[in-house]
Length: 235
Image (cartoon, rainbow, N blue to C red):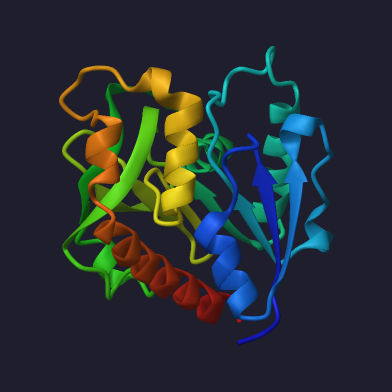
């Protein structure tokens, strides 16, 4: 596996690359970051091999509140056009979808907590997701959703959200759900975004989220499988 320069775009102090950064460091890859919430400028596409766009509590269209969103979208657009590997999680997936022409709107209901994701038949024809199980638990925390960008393959769905993930070409991935989350990361989300935990069919209480500790090893295994496959594809 070639040495990878992985750069992470972060939108909030309490949401980091978590398991993605851990995977990269275990493989001996370089990890850098831009703290957009501190108004740090994103890098140019020649400064990284992989661009990882993380989640955050804002929406992709809140340019008045977060002017750096426009710069971030240009960074993503340049990375895609230069053929870089790009991975977006939650808000990050929505930003990539928006850049690729997939509109982002409110989902029909919020989805917060542990809920099953279903692998689509199209995903099983791809190199990245061909070995994924038909159904698996994933961690969710979102109120918006994206439309599938033109030319992208839908790779996952759930009861609450029709578009849970997409693959564009062979090297651009958007995941609405979280495979990178650790127990500590989940607790930080509960601490900082707990006001979003309101009664709903697809909203779990903090206690119920914390009761599923076994799921962390399951999602880590799936994330490592996907990242290893992505690294082989990008080699």
